[in-house]
Structures are given as structure tokens and as C-alpha cells.
Length: 130
Image (tube, one colour):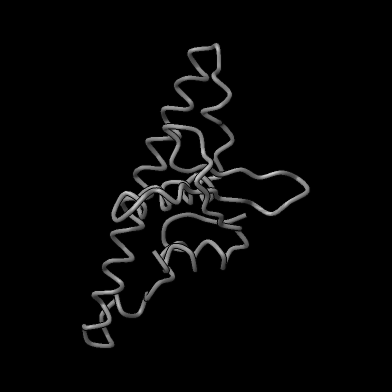
């Protein structure tokens, strides 16, 4: 969890934990023209769910998604865009958590091992930033 927070904050993303998210919503990302990007997460989550949701929401930022589940688009194209964005964020989360886990394990490997060399700079390997 600490690694996810460091990755987010290192890229200027503000992270907040709250008990006041609507029912059924574990996390969200938003950005405005006048403020830093923000991730808001439910403080009720624990364990692997908490890490996955954090990585998933961070994925929306990294992948620069513009669609929102709150928009409830009336078109089939809009619905498909939301489904695609959610699937991409899920894949990103799984890969990021895998790389972080591998990086932690990599500390036990010889210095020449690629996982050790890469350390926790995993986001550069996954997607570009603007």
C-alpha cells in the first residue's frame, strides 16, 4: 500500500481516504483544470481489495481516461467506452501490483537481476505520463 501511495504522490496525485463515498463506490479519480489530480478511496476497505482499488483508480489517471461511470451515457458507444476503460484499469492494477510484488521480492535477488534494477519505478514501464 505504501508503494502505491508513493507512486501516486510522486506524480502529483493527491490521495484522500474517506468514509463518505456513496454505497457501492470504493474509489474514484478526478481532475480539473484548476487543481491537482485527486484519488479518493474508501477507508472501509482492507487488505487486497484496498490495494487493488487503489491501483485500479491510479490506472485511470495513468491511462488518462476521460469517461466517468457517473455520466451514465445514453449511447451504446458511451457505455462501451466505460466498460473498456474499467477493463483497462483492472488490467493496469493487476500488472502494477504484480510488478510491485516482484520488485519487493527482487530485493532478495542478486544486484544484476532486472527486477532489482527496476526497483519501484514500475509506472514508467507501464504507461507514459503527460
